[in-house]
Image (cartoon, rainbow, N blue to C red):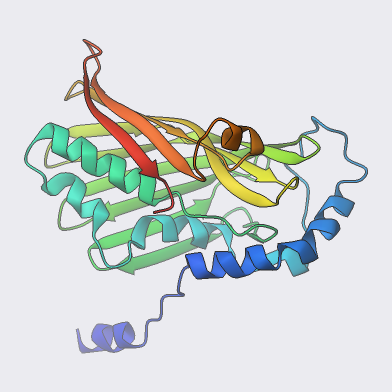
Length: 268
């Protein structure tokens, strides 16, 4: 035990990139936008760019697996994952699962990307009651698998995903394939979750934003949530939608009766 405590005292978790880091990157975006567009000069619109490689100077000093793990364990001091099981009513548990899901939608740093992990690479983090293990399980396509547990609340999360990016001229449209499954073992409930799209826009203003529809469903409680994420596009501004806004609803699956409205911003 003494040896374990000594190790824990010297354990340092790398601080996740914050909103301040993102603001700095947006300020510097004009310095990299021309370089990025020059990389695509020989790429035809509509092309799959899954195997497209960024030059090393545009890589973040971390692996993609570490970035995935940060989505799960880093909540600015709040245990949002454990809260999913602590609530007594099914509707309150679903609301907590929705909150946790939104919290994983971190703002991305435009023009910067983590290093692609190699097959068999792993990344493990233990933070409080949360343990997270990520592994790169495939190279073509590049599939990552994450398994997380919350020891105190007996929660199990599995998460697999890979990207299918396509070049669209003024932006890159990234379809995120895979699924997230959260099991609240003490409650005997399973929540299935879709994943949003990622839009990396070059013009008229550069930025990287989550967009599209996400569905969260629990068969045992007959409840589901539907989220719509708006990207920061020129069209969305014309429609009066705010930057990074989110709208949605919680309904009874069998009847379609709406119980709650969801609205706000996914980065706040």
